Length: 86
Image 1: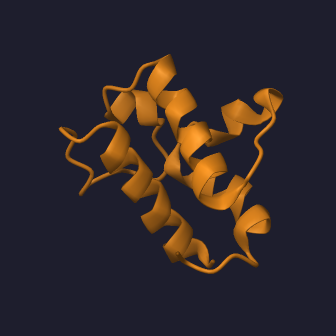
Image 2: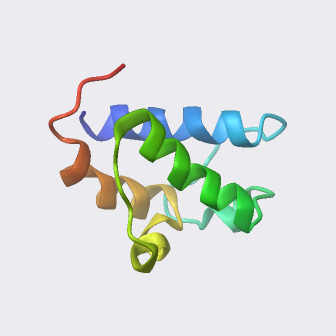
Image 3: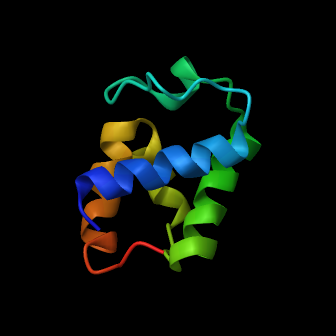
């Protein structure tokens, strides 16, 4: 997956977790929690969805890497580079 595909996948996951949120204007460099009404359980749901959809294991000590769209894409790029879109 390339950067744009990873970003799309994150938006798709966020739309499942927070269906009432407007995700059309998610800023890359602003923390998800500052832009969206996500709590810690929603954040764990993102991690679980990545595991379920792509078998990506994210260690708990790396959860902070998923704070914003840019940091999430940067973190996931090497892990997802060889994956095909489902």
